[in-house]
Length: 183
Image (cartoon, rainbow, N blue to C red; front, side, top):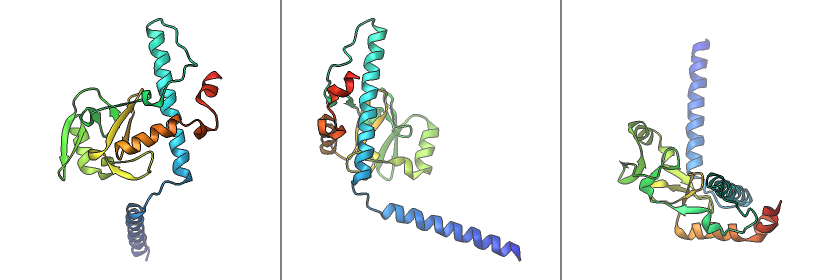
């Protein structure tokens, strides 16, 4: 009979996906070589967003820009209040968002659709710290925005400082920031 086999296949598929999801939530994500590579890529995109924004502003204002100037990494990101972040889209809104309280934790977004998404999709409430690679709750995270408005969530100010130290390290990329900007 083919019908019981179909139910058996569906049953096994469901059990396998549940087991896989449970094993992912228990797994400890230690910062290893892949995490460092991911952090370097993120640093570079944050840096590029900053310089692209600088170029755009200079064009808008008819100013010249010194493309070779070294800018400390602290300027690439700005600390933003959590209540001005749409935590579903991970974008800086620049204005107060609606508070969504779930299990005593406060998240922020605009509109009923986003609130529904928070309540129905538990994964939206979490992000990964770019330095430690740990999964963190957005409600308690330290939030920084890059020049494009993308939000980076950090476990603490200390991990943000580590991120900045990595960005300011000339040895990280294998070349100095001056050499990179020159070309």
